[in-house]
Image (cartoon, rainbow, N blue to C red; front, side):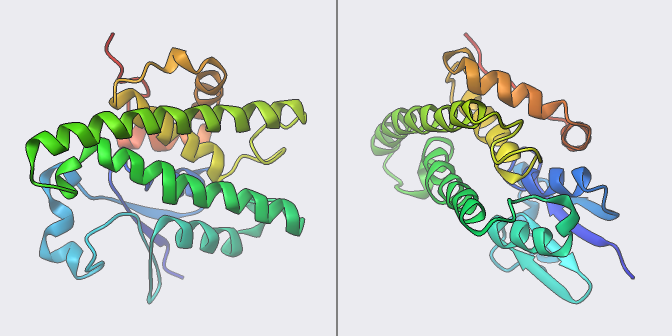
Length: 219
């Protein structure tokens, strides 16, 4: 059987399935896509994903795109990894938070990082960045609140005893916050949690492969 192949961009949301594959100790072929060089728009990658986005998971003849679809596929493919709780209501709540991270927090950062996607007016771009940064800070407050709730419940990780996509996504989203020049020390509980997640062997291997620095904040 051919190993899975994951196309990822260093520091992008593809870090989540990248880490999950490492955590599960699954044999896979990591394929880096240099987003800063525009490789996602070049013909070899466009033939794999015409939408020019990472992550992309290739499993045999199947090509799966979009982080939510990929993570849910990995959960089904490797049930022993326990990426989400098994109990239906707990699983639904975990996916609810995961979807919110993807459909709300993630796009908010896009408004900070790439405002030109939303207008070609430079003055408007500046306004978008300022407004989105305030929104993003509020989202980090909510993620920290979720960490606090999990800790009050006695959980090791956000959804219980097993590390999963929510924990890894929290690393990415906090790291992006530091890129937006939001001080991680403004979120001490979340920042401590993120650093703890980053020390998990599988996550650490993904960080090393992507050559990531967790804190990009400059005082």
